[in-house]
Length: 242
Image (cartoon, rainbow, N blue to C red; front, side, top):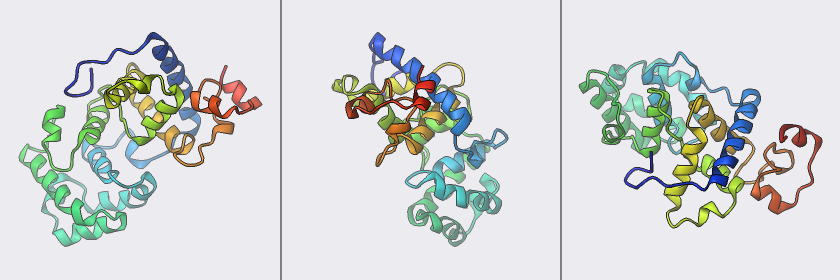
């Protein structure tokens, strides 16, 4: 599977090996340190999953976590969302700073799905036709609702991949296609969704945009970015990086 609209990008064998190592370390880290987020619970309905992913657009998981339960309580279904008075929906979204644009998008999305008998589309093309659903959210729906091996390539995952692999893979003329190929190799196979969440959480909590936690990072012995900083290994990192 390549980036939509492009031919598949072939990764160098060495990159594949490093991504395999990275995947195993991320899954191990995630088992102990992954974020416990309400919308990741296994009994969440497709409606609750899609709502969470739309709420997460242009805001933080911390902010959504504070508002999510109340939003679902007030709007428990596509029907309730599609029929909600706009001022009521605006009030629910205002704490997230999303209320102006997101209100109409949410209601349009709910009405479209209601018109489809409450069924969430199963293809990327159909999903991206819906208001409020872009490429990332479509990938999230396909991965979480339908169990597809779709990479959830956001800024956190992209930053992790670029730092870990260094600039050699980034020299490709089409960086978006390259990143998608790297992300797909990272998450494909068994436990695909866990691998996605592990990469997202690691990028958010450890491989942060500002002040990354390189000194205690369990990936640092093989991370190009950490190596460029010439950090000295610590016993805890050594144990996890064997």
